[in-house]
Length: 297
Image (tube, rainbow, N blue to C red; front, top):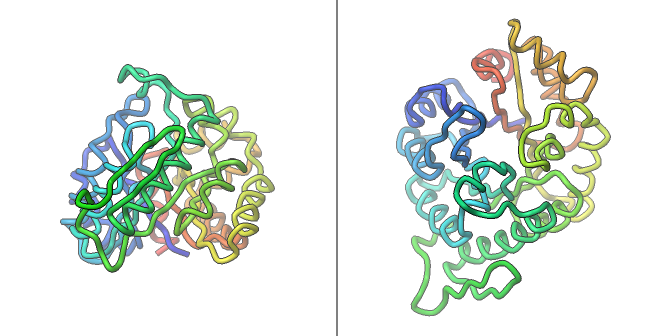
């Protein structure tokens, strides 16, 4: 099992320094998220943070978890992915997500699309991005994107080893649409809890193991050889903040990823039974990565 850790935005460390520390600890990958804010947490620009990580490390892989399709053009995303692949000497993986947080989109003066439109835009964006990442060119006329980058107009620098394209999805429609387009699918276990435009812990508490397992099986039914990852919100430690979060999720499936570090690590390792080979760990409580490291690395 591979474990990637997500940069704890708002916690203070420089993204490059943080990534170098994580590389030294032995994590397989580091991630940069794409938000303006989530609640009281402010985020650095995703491409700047990922570049700082690439320049400060030599071995660890770097990914965007996940570029926000509601904030980014797929052409901009592909251009940045090519540049980051070059800057990292081939260690970058291009993660693109549909976007989910309503208030940051509306604060920009944009209209927040409903769920079906977000998914439709996402599938089109992945189609465009894949062509551009592999060839530097794309002719596409869809409902949401019309992209004509061709002939003398081309993106660079192309690579003989294009960055892997990764999709994050958690619903049947999105999973069916993205799976044929990408190199890895990361199942978002908490996807239903963000479809309302914010993170709803009440909905998160209702996620079941059968639901997550079913999503993995949906992907395998389309492409049996598809590498599978999963996005997990973790809270590891023995302190009141962790205990409160775990209690709030009750007996829900995702509560097993909160609690004593050894117990959380055991639950994470058990994801391999679903055919999952990579886990992306996002802290809900600061210090969770450090608490889990002795049990996972």
